[in-house]
Image (cartoon, rainbow, N blue to C red; front, side, top):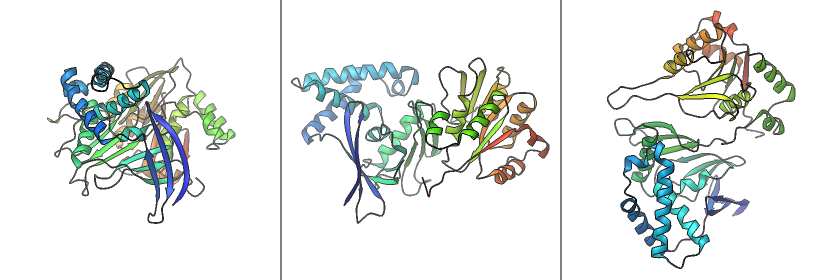
Length: 387
């Protein structure tokens, strides 16, 4: 066994130690997570406290998943946990108490052990393939790694998916086995249920920076050259519409957000997305809007086109769209460009030629005469060979 790297961080009040190892038996690196060991007796006691929590707080499941009540419920849970710990373990020290409070909060209101991984800033992706396999993570420096963390059961994976779904007003069931949502902390969340995913229930969490990545950060990391950044700054200042394109995980949405930091604070920005990913600076006059899936009766859907059409009635100076996927969305966007709005959007395509092919052919299929409305295309590449 060869240790590649060892580092530590805090998940709330829980100190976490990460060791990245190369084992001879494994084809990929192992991401080992270690926290202060909790004895079997303490675990039994903590489970008893957890069972008592709901009774003591008097909070129903629908309250727990109501975003408007989240802060109130967290505080109520925390106070009750502190009270119960003092009752069952009266001689507990403050440091241990803080640790156990965070541990119980993760288990009661969060995603359990997954919460520990969410606080590692080195991770881009966290995936659960099923209850039999370990959780996998995508590390900034080492790519895909296996962890030493498992989810207890398929039912537990489904519970986490349902919990997140209810918080954003969406359901995941055998009739509707796919879920795309986002966590309160900003991570994109996707879930699938068996038998659609044949090996078991899955979860995929894409992590995003809470603090927006700026062009300055990109210059420091050599992601972009100074002349290119200057050109983009000038184009944004003169309100030219732009399209950011690239392959999967090339940083399209991150770059779109960085471009938006050039917007003047005295202009109104409307962003339209399926899943909340764009993060803009607080000084901007920004209204983020999200689509909504239909309910179980097939009613109440708000799609991308509805939001784009509505945004044109909100007197926007700039319209930002997470991703163009369909013809009517593209037609409405290009119409907005022709009527003098500045529009910024992303599109899945690997280069300029592919971008044009996608725009001009089905399913997007816009007329060639509309193309001059785009002043600039920014193509994102992820060089996997050099990192």
